[in-house]
Image 1 (cartoon, rainbow, N blue to C red):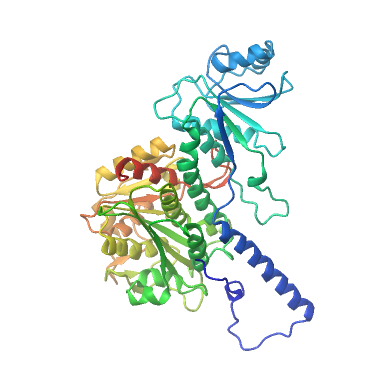
Image 2: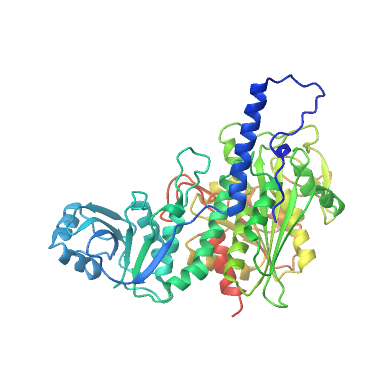
Length: 543
């Protein structure tokens, strides 16, 4: 159960003994602000995750009127479902399509109004190949982008008479619609309550779609929503302790789940000087959140470790002001691993799974790490701090070592918005993946492809480990060698035994989208939940 929030979390005590006298008006204003912040946080903590849309699954039928969304296969003329709709409109649909030069090419769309007997028709191109899960999800996402139901009119999504690959379900259409419907507007005066929008009707011949969505994919969407929420929250409200409390609220009441957190005293007692050192410059102390979901019998668990820097100022190696606001999202890896476990636990997956969220706020102060300092990690390895802005690898150094020692996992995967250089190498379409073992890299690459998220393997070899050797300690955290993404991976890998199956995902280039994609509105993406979820289904979930 989430602990009560304290005003001190928002208004830390001043260190100076002198205080200004405040007027009654100022005091009243501060109380009002505090009450507002508490209302917002308790609302979020009670629900855990942003509200989702409601879906209704029904037998395939073409409505007699109203608003419809239909898939259109690519071709010179309308076929299948689109042809039937054209007949109902007495050829008006084909005439409009020809006038607009719409061919049904993949991820194209056309909206028509007042084509009798329908008030609105949204056509979404699905290409010429048999539809796979990603295409189905993208269709649903584009449908949501065209008509999200905020006008109040019911939305009818037609999904029939389509050449589909095995395993594709109408539930995937709903998943795509759900993912694109995400919005983060809880601090705006005019907000949209997704729960109050009209039900989205998905009409298909898939009799198992409702069970598939409500018992499975709905929870996957919730895990992605959680990851997006964590990154979108402002850093004055989302700090290590608050992250822990929100996670506790989200997992409350779920079977086979234990949620606990190591505080700053426990981090020091365990010798986690690398993690503790990052957070000690902030008035909001660091935490290591541990979420155990044990529903897989006696099998060794999979451990997922996520970088959780709730705000990264750079510390004493201060960042420039340009886009520093985005550093509230430097906890993306922690959000992804937490959301992945939430999805598995909610659908009751038969698996043993642990999420470690290495949480800290990286701030400059008299108590912060300094460039040139030496800290000692839990493994006993000493680290020279060359840059306090290379802090994500420091918190992960202790997290991956703790995860390996405590759980003896079959697989260890860390996820982090670690380096800008990975974006320079791969752009915003691929995450970087690193590791010593080819098998896990191949498995995660296949999972990412099936999930519609892309990874690209980048080098990690002896030269990268050689470059991080320090003249004053065992290793140095920054400022040496290239490429930067590989050097960062080597630093984390230093704290992972060579025999441990391990992979490192650097998501810095894909965790924030500057423009909409079919299933992700502009903003923090929650990238990685789909990939990790698919990997777990493919290789670790038992029947």
